[in-house]
Length: 280
Image (tube, rainbow, N blue to C red; front, side, top):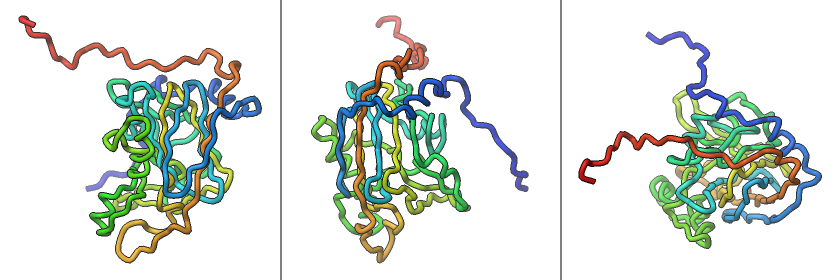
């Protein structure tokens, strides 16, 4: 017999999960004294990697029409520390927005970035349960494409990210589960993953504050705005629904940084119960 539905509390709670809004709100709102240190546009069905120094803000924006982007993050000095989508989903939410934080893998487990601006934050939850900026799914890849469609295609997000990070000494094994920026997703009544048409319009943007020196990589998804299905039989190529994305990295005036300092990892020293041998 099924139980009556009830409201449930988040499994993970605590002040360490909460961003200091008095610090991050002005960083997202006071843009007039920012300095552009890098800006470029990523063409359709492509990818690019770039550095975001600690204490800088990175903006991802739509320039011609709705477009989904798949984002990976690494510690610039140690790529073993990288964005952990599933833990971010647990500690923050399955769909993230302003003041949510993007967390790194074990044993580092610290915020890599904090979202400081999201022009689509008011989208909320639509009638089908869709929400934006998804950690539920992951990047499209040529292996799934070959399995489902029998078609080799070299410009899925996984491949775009692979090509993007090669100049930085990383390989396919370093590509990991992404943050799907501007992507509208949810779970249906059968608990199956669904994707909806991206609602972003030209000028919409998503900004994150780098909590450490970062290497970022972004793919402009070959599905474009995802208004047409990418997988299944007899699907038409949705290339006409693809648009570029612009990336801008900003240096901030010192007064906005205040007492900010790079987050540290939890001070766990237990050694996982492994004890040295008496003869060691």
